[in-house]
Amino acid sequence: MYREFFEDLASERVRLRTVTQREFVSATHILRFAGVIKRLKLQSADAMIAECCRELALESGERVVFYTADWKLYFILRSIDRFKKALKLRYLGQGRGGIPPTT
Image: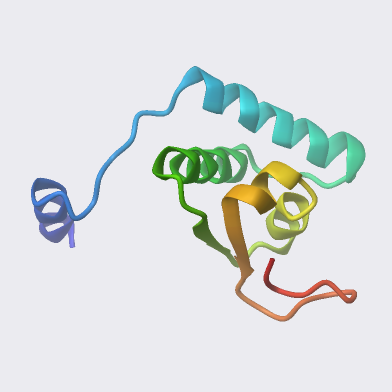
């Protein structure tokens, strides 16, 4: 798998992006929103991945499908308009409390 990953990089099937300061700041806003408003603890890596995906969608000009098996992350992101506008959120499981697993 290690070799295949680097072959994918060489053929540009997979592209790496540099994380920007703006993405770091936006991820901290997600963490603050999750903790203060929603009273849920979110992992910083989850917030960073979500923010990088949102930035990718903005750069490409297309809504990107964001899959997650983490209900807290899905619940928080679907509460933030900028994520609902940029991403098609998909929870890999059953919806809960009347909340559907897709946006």
